[in-house]
Length: 620
Image (cartoon, rainbow, N blue to C red; front, side, top):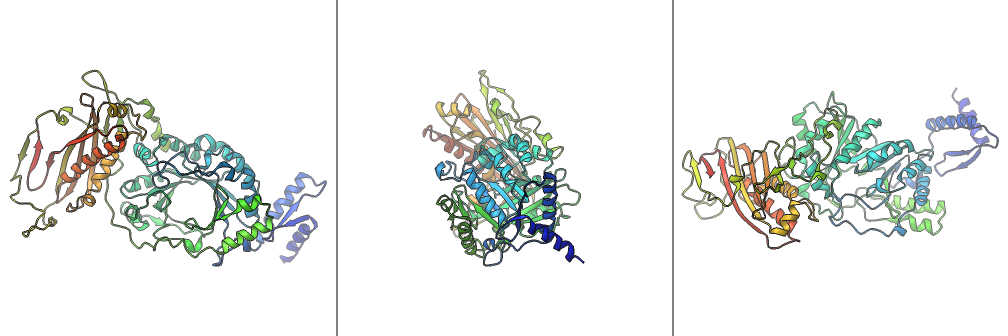
């Protein structure tokens, strides 16, 4: 019974002026004199017919393992307005001369060719695609391609709020926004640029314009942002977000380190401890993500397991670089220049043969770069980012919008830095950085000019022998298995004498490397978390809190650092506090060494410790 309607449809198609593509799908030309309404109705009937009777997929885009490549990623530019630590070296990368980059017409020519062959999704990437001046026009022209179902963009979000209304009108259908932290100061540290509030505004704009889900790409790096997993997931409770946790991957220039990678299984275990009801959703065909949802939450979360559980077997992606090279694998080194063939006058058939040959050479899995990782290193517990870093100072350019938390419509997000001038005795202004919102700093206790003395309370404070040496004089780790868990708190300090020139640049935040106090503060926090990896015989301590304060002393052109650590356990945290203060001071030296090498690091000392069998210690 179904044969007659199909026959009539075929006759109608055959009576029309027809040109065909290699995938077998007819492409009609309007007949002379045909009304626009009639042509629209005919186009609608044709689309319905093609949905019910799909043509065979292009042989040119099918590799030797039967994978059909229907997803094309096009890089619009090599340039980026950020310098993310996992993506690009601080000094940037050498750029291809403009004449060697694809022109807009060349981009559209290649896009038409791939769409005719069966590509139904195109994602625009970079660099940062939204810094290309004609990005809106490119989206609008791609939107005219028949057969293209989805146009997406992956962006760092800096320009998104400004451009998204135009992009949506042009036909942009999907958005991925890169965001690796919810802490403004840490954002600046990771990307080496400012712009946290702009990214937040872009996400808010996307939600307001009806994009659902808005995908958030978060590259998880041990010791940097793995402590924010729960906070990112919490955002999905009231917002239509798909937070995608991406395993840290190697790229040229990002100094990839195995120890920085947090595996999918480790991240999932962390989330399941908080939300045991977390449920896995069915995986879509050719999806790179393992998707989960917490019942009752509006959004969901995903994991991109590029390193621990690769998805090469279902890969349907091809990539065109900004200079026109076709990459059949992100990790592969093999590239074919479509630009050169296009500019040499290659016909469509010749281009298809070149593309087909490249796709045919695609390997079963990515680039033999790494053995599949079975397990990543053990997790390093770290500080909860629910204690956001607050920055106090006088530089109004640091002040983000006071309304930023409202962008999340009731969902928690780290607050913006507060601005509060503090007066020194001489009437000069002081920059004071604290990693805790309720700091009660007593400058006198940090003054290295005062003569300090130690006081003790409780049982015998010292030992008559070295505890990290055995009876034969060999180094050994103390066994703390039999000790009771108690609350341990330690405070340490350090002083960095900068000299007048470097001090002024730090005070006014004019160093070329960036904000020295923010970077040093973050370095101190990270150092506390990694102490057991730096000091050989230190036990690993699950810290519950770290606080790092940096105070400017204009009388000596110095920065005074105070670090405090807290934990519940069988061993103390004085080494964590001392390591934090020491590394923060070393970081200040590194930030300022281009200005002056006459910088003195000193007075690294324990201020106090409480808890433990040896009693409390206080330096007064």
